[in-house]
Length: 442
Ligand code: ADP
Ligand code: MG
Image (tube, rainbow, N blue to C red):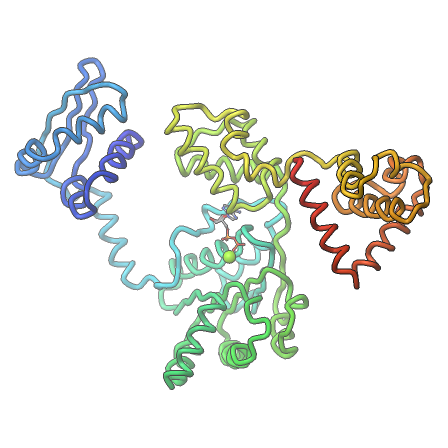
């Protein structure tokens, strides 16, 4: 019913102004659908709605019905005054609480919709510990991982949890970029005192994407002092970054050591099993039906980035309902063609040899031969180097594929090319082109 109502309302939403939608269709409910007699009963708050719909929206409502059911239904109305139902009361109650809800937090990101698996369990456990006893477990907590793996989600989850359990805490989520911008504006407008009062009176500072600090002197300086004040006053600080403190370039040592005072933890690359659980969860949340085998296919063929996977699921859901097609492997391959490629099939060494040989005007057999002409041995070394880079094959295996050569030849080739790349931009360009050419085959 909910799903039908959503599709019905979405159809209308796209065809009336926002104001009209809000006034007339928000209060409209589908009360009953009688499939035997093709009759829909809507409930509306008062008589005036009925007149208004009849005069203005009859045609549109009919269209929307056909859009949803693929056939014509008659419809009538009953009047239902919006009662103070339990859920209404709950909403009201929630709204009173919400007045205090920190503006910077996002309600959507919570612990209870965060799926835990081996790759993120430590980050999850540490975040939960911090949320349960702020300033008493790990301080600062520093979480890092590559993009789309749940850092921002965890930060907000910590904030939401603390908000729900310790109302009096002042919680602030801020990206390092926002902090920097705030700082710049405060300096320009001579409002540094406000800035300091603001950031130094926080109880829980959740700072996202700290790698943005790299090379930003003034921000580092200010953050250093903010950190010290908060830390001395026993306030909780959580940082995230796309790399470990050690790997953030151009950052003052004293700040780096501060990051290392508490607990540093990383989120690793997700394993397929947990990805399947995440896909199931997201599909459910979005009312999309994804069979188990398809979930597994997605988990193993999409890049291991939960944000990308989420986007893919939404896309599959939208297109499958538009085209009225079930989500099969074939359908997935069609709809997600562009992102599936990223982790498509394993690259075959034969393809590397073919592309490289062609590029240098040779035959693949030349690369496997023992010929020592300059051009041939360069091409051979490049092909060996690319085989190391683009496949997971071992040195002996690669040697074998190049006319049964010893593994030391492959190692030598790899070193030679790496050496040359250091001061040969032309070769670098060629190699990049070759990589593009090879990948475009997949
Ligand atoms: P990051 O900050 O590491 O780039 P995000 O926290 O923004 O990643 O996560 C990207 C998307 O993936 C978000 O929509 C988030 O809700 C979702 N996500 C990440 N990890 C999980 C998880 N373990 N369970 C459920 N959703 C997740
Ligand atoms: Mg993030």
